[in-house]
Length: 355
Image (cartoon, rainbow, N blue to C red):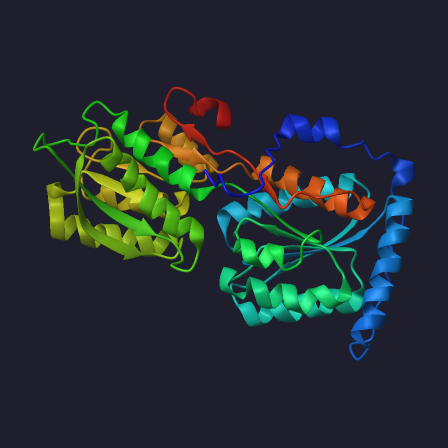
């Protein structure tokens, strides 16, 4: 996937090998003093460049991290891992909550620029705002590591050498969801009528992960020659409670016509499961249910047979790759434009190892 892009895969093992262990003596005070909000761009750029050079020489750095929303289950795991790895490198780390509001995140980015951070790690609230984010940051010459939500390639190209993306290809996660259904005893066609009928619980419509997971989960079925029918697509915005309500309504409206419930993430799958059980349906017997993220509760449900499967969105692999990219920027080394971390199918056969 993404054959037209420069790609480099980083596994957790490769990261550990590539990253020098930061000893206690290497934990130094972060560089980069505060800049006045009225300072000219040229002065800010000069100050940041000097701070980055000092950071590279000393091995320390001041890193600002912008997360789109702390309430997100997966990003909670991700930011916890990321903070640990960056601090292990001896960096000073400040992580802020964008509260799913782009204006709030933009203000946070401006604050970090005024403070003279050496690197910014950004999980954008809206990928459509990524170019504006780059345009805001680039006069300061501060490197950017975009994470989790992929900007357009043109955005990265506009700040070449100072900007990269670390993430997983959401098309792969969608494909794996479809494959999980194809690997069931009935290949998704529980009633044997030659057609797989499903509902879809979707995440943020602006999020490319939600778009790709929705598209490619079904593409995996049709590519395998299966006829499909979408009963309804629900916009649940990654939210467990919203998905629970929508799936309850769907089960009441469509009943046994629903053979598969696809969820763009595990939080929504957990909500769906609550409604499935309340409706007296049994996953694996008269309905299938798949999610993405491999949250601990979801993985336990796979072990227990309460979910058909999920797809590991590797927070550890992505966080380590983001930390490594940050380290390369701090050291002034060459940085690839893309760093990809593979998804992993989680089934009853392998789920226990992900608990």
